[in-house]
Image 1 (tube, rainbow, N blue to C red):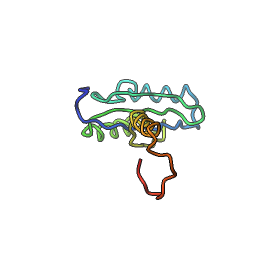
Image 2 (tube, rainbow, N blue to C red):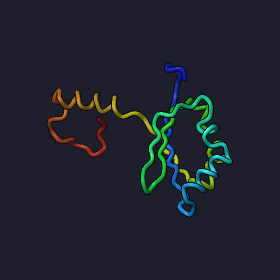
Image 3 (tube, rainbow, N blue to C red):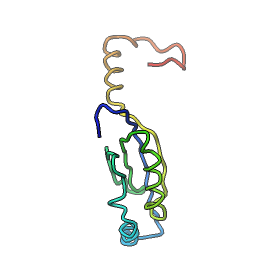
Image 4 (tube, rainbow, N blue to C red):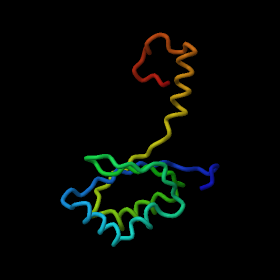
Length: 119
């Protein structure tokens, strides 16, 4: 992926179908060629975590024009094994560092006067 290109991040919750055991889930994924189809070409995996009791949480970085392709691949190969939820995301670390620097510089020594005030 071109580092200078415009990208978005998408976090996908893949909740396990708990009516099936692990062997059944893996068999279904293999039959659908899941491990080769997802994510589609041109989509970067930022993180992929197993969360016990939930399933898997995948964060992807992709060009906006690949969003429909990600959706189609999930419909083709994940449905029936996982229920899916999608959340647009962004990397908060640089924002946190800017806020931290401003706080250390004394910009927020008094409480904010308005609840709608922006950092």
